[in-house]
Image (cartoon, rainbow, N blue to C red; front, side, top):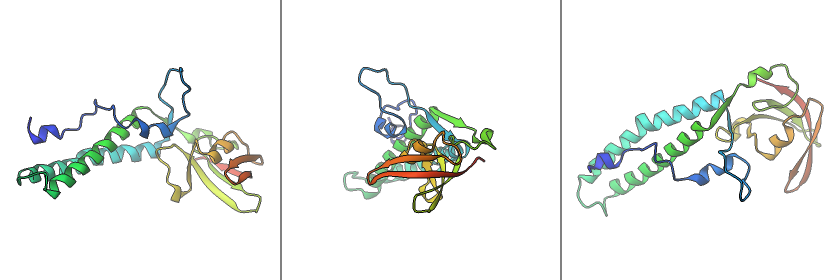
Length: 192
C-alpha cells in the first residue's frame, strides 16, 4: 500500500470518537436500546457544518496529504518534524471529518420560520428575557453543534433554553444554576 492510499479518509470507518456525540442528547439508562440522539439544527447551522466538511475534504486534507507525502520522501520519519506534525494534523482532520459526517447524518433541520408570529418559545427562537435585577438578555436557541456563544446563541439542551422552551411571552421560568434558582421573565419571542 502506498503512502497516498494509507492516508485516505474512509467515511465508512466511523467507529471512533463516540464520546464527541454524547453531548448532543439525554443519557440512556442501562438496559435501554440506544437510539441516536436527535440532532436538531437550523438551516444556517447545517449549511455552516456542510461548508466546513467540504472545506476539510476538498482543501485542507489534500494539502496535508501532499505535505506528509513530501515529508515521507525526506528519509527518517522518526525525527522528521514535517512528517510527524503532518500525520498529527491529518488525524485531527480525520477525527473532525468523522464527527461532522456522523452529526450531519443524524441532523434534523428545523424550520423555525413556520412559528413566525407565535409568542411561545420553540427551537430556533430569538428570546429576550429579563432577570430579577432588570438586566435584559437576548438569546437564540439553536442546535448543540452550531452554538456560537459570542453571537448570543445557546444550545436547546442548555439549562436556560430548557427552562424557556414552551414558555409564552409574559411567563416567568425558573432556572436551576450552581448559585441557586434564577427567575427569568420572557419579554419577547421572534423567529426568522
